[in-house]
Image 1 (tube, rainbow, N blue to C red):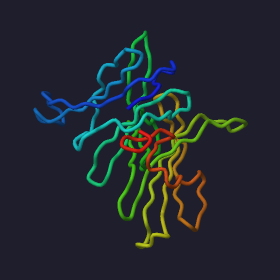
Image 2 (image 1 turned 90 degrees about the vertical axis):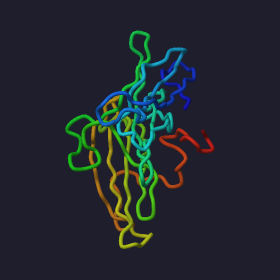
Image 3 (image 1 turned 90 degrees about the horizontal axis):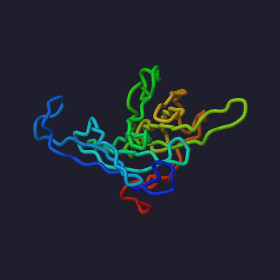
Length: 217
């Protein structure tokens, strides 16, 4: 997956690889352990071990989540009913490229899908539910905020494809730190959401970046 990860105007590469595990923890010896690497400006990051990759992980997209002109790394996590996505922040320290898990900082929104810890959200769906995420730019004025990542989940009601319950959570992006700014639930078509509804027909991108395997990738 390619992107301008350091903001130098040059394209770098992010990739995920697997190797047999020789450690304990959640994996048995020989099970694949997944790692992410970013190569930018001829410098490679140290591999970051990815957790919860039992079904497999892969580079998914290189979106600019915080609207600062540089790319972050989205990694897909295979699930039985689709995929989840986690996000990695790419930083430069002392001339070295480093990648870190983007995290929702405490207190988050306890009891919702915005619990504190590494960000993870579903993408796609099956019959009866669909989910994803989109980005909003920074705002100005009296109520100015930074860029926002909006995560949403929609579930069909009563088996009727015209009736849905949609839950939307907003996160203000501060580098690799995500600050929960509220979660709301509304009924479609009866109620209007407090945030823009999920954009339709954009399954091949994440925050403007093409996802792996799409026509724009």
